[in-house]
Length: 457
Image 1 (cartoon, rainbow, N blue to C red):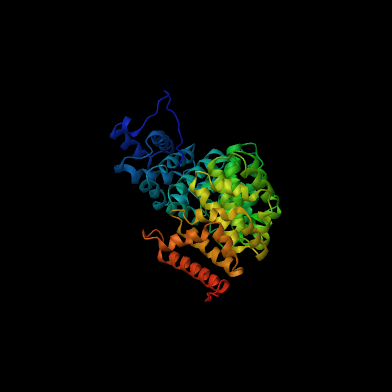
Image 2: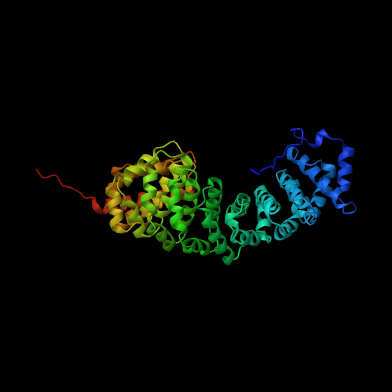
């Protein structure tokens, strides 16, 4: 949710557009033009900054003119004009999308970046707040901010020698987390690496909110869609991976750290292995068995499913964990559908990608008790199809697995999928289920051939 900057009037009450006359508003709007004195402009900017605290949706007849003139004031180096203009635009960016987008449409991003480059302290901090609110408005606005020169400027401030000692840190890191949210594809790798170095130092501060926002920013950078380069950047930033794992022990940072580590584990096998080598799995399983919030449990289950989607070695590491089958079974029987789904993917991914020896181990464990329930998870077509594929692979590895599958009522569940007449399963899923039943029939025919017996008296 975008954040509105609040300020009180001298008498302690908030004043909005509805509390003043139209003539007064028009007068102050005129004073915002460059034809009046700098003192008059400063008074007018402060006037609108105060009005926009309570009514951050400016009246429609003046919205365009007001936003254009506030943007112009970002370049007026006099008194508090730049600060108050940025402050007012921060609150405009909390308005409906149409108002927020006008800031971009009228050249606000360029003016904000220029203002950040030539100011410091509270004014620059207010500019960063505005940029964060714009990025938070919608994906279109976020992309516009990402494509601007805002991030290089912000990263330069983040890694400047005096930033760690500045009182103006929160808004910059928060804004970066909003701009990075959902992943970043357009930022040059050198800026990504520099940002990570700056964010790493923020993970050691005592300010909990600042530390949480910095962790989320790292997590969003690790949400890599550029071939794994950003994941590599996180992994190669000295001490960063170790610190992310340490942050699992702090309640406030746990979820953001889980997301960051989950995005790293979701990379390639080598990247996943690097995270496992750093000691994630023992720490994760310890937390997984605790009574943690459901959102945290979902993140952990997602990480487990990605580990299970990895190499033979990674699947082995997961299932060599003490009481892993009991832990997965208990988690699957919770009331949260998303957690159950991720546990299902953990089981299915393991059955699909395990080595022959680990497949035998899995078939000998009670993990197969979950499979009939996976095949009945409503609305999870991809998981059901993948589970059937895993069963096909098990039979292909060793046809005698059919009897094990029968003992766990898996074959019975597959027959019900084929026989279902309520269109609960699509044609592709049913076709895969039929192939499994055909393999079962072929195996039984070879194993127990038909014979004609003659009764001998």
